[in-house]
Image (cartoon, rainbow, N blue to C red):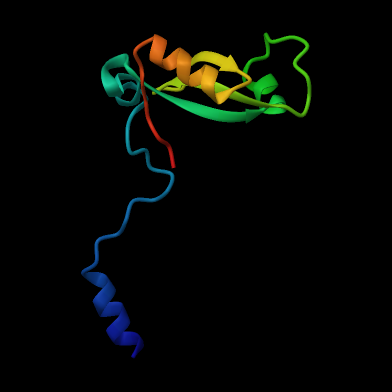
Length: 98
């Protein structure tokens, strides 16, 4: 029985490891031609780490970061509606991340 499992797996193609990049950073940056963004939900502690120049950010609040496809920060706000409004105002398409 072990022999048949081995032989059936020989012909299977190995899937890429989770560590292999699907896209390069340059390809990701060019995604959507600069018109694609996403909204990331952050705790205030995460926001402090990502945006160290922000002073006096209260602890325990939820924030919404509008970011370009390559992760470049565009806006940080305390409401989803404001983040979406900013994206619409900048004529950005919001990508859904799952």
